[in-house]
Image (cartoon, rainbow, N blue to C red):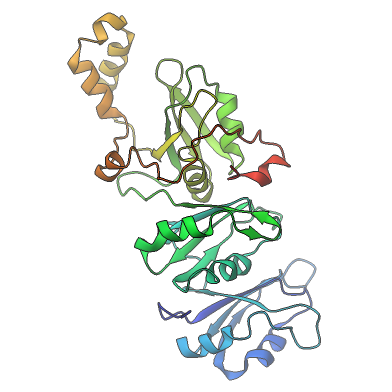
Length: 329
């Protein structure tokens, strides 16, 4: 059932530029009480609209027209439910991340594809760039958190617009951390910053990359947008590097603002290794400044899921062509 959460708004996508409010009102009748149809500088619509309905039941009836041809036009009506007028729910409410989407896949396309697998799917979100082109990944919102794992396994690898998509569970939110900075660990010794920027830059613009540890085996990476950070962590979690090491991602906690503590931390790591090995205080201080895994992460081996690939895979190099293949095995 579409309205498991009393949804009264629908998002219409892939609208012809000449469709106007009057045409939409003619299609949906009095059940539709509001319409938001953004327009471009040329006067035509931007290809999507948010439709408000009087009740969850009227929105449910409107959804029955999904996939039907618009009157006197050769295009089909694409509809998907949204719980707010903006059509966006907080990222933390999404349970699945989908990678390797084709350039033309919209919110409605992704929603309809996953609805064919299960009726617990409540909505879909496909981020787009400034040109309106999607960024190659999207998110799925479910009514049952516990069903996310089984649905990810079931849907992984299915064909959508001619591409086999990757489906992974989203990295869980951490109330003590932000949603745009990741802590990346288990990197190969000698990993270079430019390699990290190429790998993670596929998902969005980066604000900073700060490496640490002997040989740069961990890093804090800041994204300009939360969507890119969540997609990178979810789709690359557990991916195997050339040496066999699996990448680990978690949300980065804020660094300590205690100057004396940070100074002591730096001094401990400046001492010879032979002393570090017997210096319990130095080790505990270092660990206290780094993000710690939750109890669940410890039980699962730092959050890796049982279906992660164990074979070596190559990473995207950041080019326009390869940026469309994010999330591929």
